[in-house]
Image 1 (cartoon, helix red, strand yellow):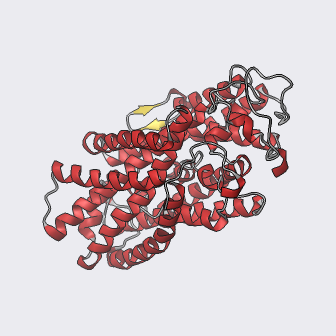
Image 2 (cartoon, helix red, strand yellow):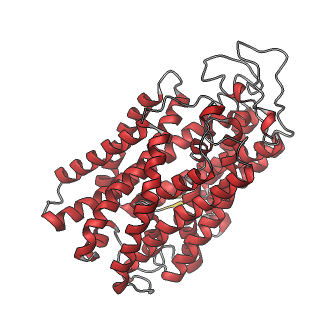
Length: 483
């Protein structure tokens, strides 16, 4: 299969051969991995019982999916990734906000997937072959996973899609075997080792779990969904079908692995750590399937995240090819794996990461969706590529390539989120306004959205300006013709 040559440029209609089923396959297959499974461990580690953990994960995922899935329709119209598409709202240079947010999201999830997958692999290899759990072993396994991940990400969308189709079937079978393997030791009681409710009370802890374990999953895809829907043709597939496929793919792709993580957390008594107890509690016959799940699943998920990171860096530095950008972010992600392994506990690192990035990403997603509704889903794909061509002008040029009201609204929403977040090592000064309950994602989205509506009234026309600052092509018929 040839290496993908496309970066964040507009995908020609003849290359847009994917469909809604492919979207479901890639969202399901790539998420059936330990990097997503481990999020189901967070509620038990916060001190919640089985039913409270179950409801927090489901509620957070459903709410997050309903808010996030419509973003998939934007790239269906623009034929490019979401951060580039957001130039319609933020300006062709202001879209760098989305690129940076997407880069940070994908970087964190890539590192987390390799970290957790590698830890489980070292544990399983230790039980099977006596491999010592030393620094050399971890470095070797992390390096192997990172190398395999890079290979898939560099070859691009078609390879990742083929891999996801296989993983959707293979990983589902491995997880079913896992339920059978861990079922004899399952309990619904809260784990005593967790030390009670993390935040001192049931509802604050439940809400933290709903955000950190449930809502964070769909939010991780706010800049990723367009990576896949840009290859779907709106001439052959309706927006309704694509939206339904996104809902189905996100719900299955997130709930199945996360609830498996919650289930195995109670079965393995994994209150303070997940990877170690998961391996220790596995019956001997399940060690090889667990090793396969840790390796193949991690490569599939991290490969998809790394692919998105390469696109985001390519959008930030247009002169870099997608392959070169992927190699660079792979090196950074691998470094983050080692930092996470040696310098932080899994619970603290995961909680801090998802809450901060949710606070930063939610207002961007809200503003982008408001702009999509305002323009009626009609875009000028050619004008979105002005920055990538290193030229100037076009209808999304605004002021020097930045839409100041949209950018300032995002900054205001993100700042509000950071000031109202509750992390293991930091509590925002606005927490007192919410009774100590972390509502950072809600506040950041509301503040950012309201500020944008008030500061930038009206829709942006998709008709070309009479006079451009510099050279750019005329809009193509793909702009309003897809409405």
